[in-house]
Amino acid sequence: QERRGRRPVRRRRAAAAVEERLGTNGLALGLCGLAGVCKELVDRGLNLTVVPYWIAMFFATLLWLAFTARVCVTPRDRLRIEATTPQLCFAYGAYQMTYLFVLVRVVALPCPACVGPGIHLGAVAQVAVIVAFLASCWATGLKPEPLWNPPTVNCAVTTIAGVATLGAGHWLVRASLWYAMGLQVLLVPWQVWRTVRDPDIAPNCAVSMMQAPCSLNALTFAVVRRGAALQGLGAVLLGDARAEQALCHALFAIATLVFWLTLYCLWARRGPILERGFDLSFVALTFPSCSTAIAGLQYASPPDRAGSSGASGPLLLALRAYAFAVAGAVAVTVVVVALGCAKIAAGEARRRSRPRKPTAT
Image (tube, rainbow, N blue to C red; front, side):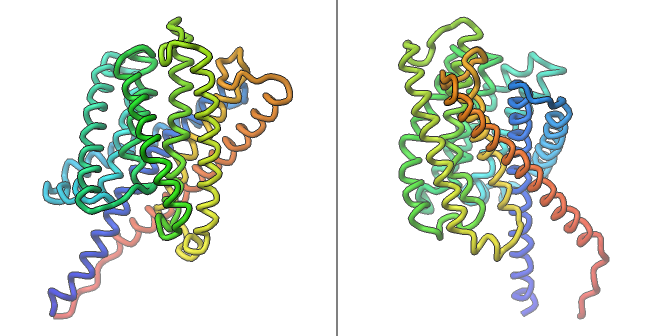
């Protein structure tokens, strides 16, 4: 009987540990996204300093290092369980993306020579994560839903990280981009259809991950085009500038549509979200929304600043107003979520520091 009584306690502790680990990855990636939004706003004339950028990257790096340390001390049997459970394995997609951002933004400063090999290592990790995740989904029968996105669309971040270092024409950069877009075509329609129709799928803020593939691919496509233009490579993706421009319009339109469908899904799930209150699932609001904001900022930039829309006059003003409004709302959201997670962590630290009551024998 004593052993039976201990089992629920152990299960609750295991669930809390898993939630904490997943929240660590999601918040670290969200802070990387916030740093990207800050950089895009500065590049577009907003009078910001580099301080918010480096604060976000500092805490993102600390969280990534903390999770890496915990993985190193985690027993192999537990890691094996996480690799074969989709609800746990998907978090390693966020871990791999954070690794790439830390590599090109932080590690590249003292050791530029480490970036190239590090990106190739990240690509190998990307393949390992998606193979493990898809195998676990096949074994459990889990159909596409928002939690599929971190371990699948993470290949787009490989493209973003590789453009400046490897070049827009490098085979890994282009292959990762087309691979990500292929997954978007195969998975997003099915995923969006199921999530919009069934509120029991991702019945919390995790539904925000639904916007990730389309916004990240729109962002990545624009990054590669801009990198190719700066490197004098021309139309390296399709071989025709008009075709690339048309695809750029289509990607932004699809990303905008899925973004608003994601907002609809959040509204449809407002009951369970408000009833449960703030928890670590709110970190799903961070990075996917940041990629949506950055995609909008890049699309709405003037043509002389490598903008993707090619618009001018009132249309450009409207696009810029929309993009800056989304970016501002997203930046505030990420900061609020980060503060909420810090409050949860502080409460957990206080709880663990309290002396335990002696158990009756």
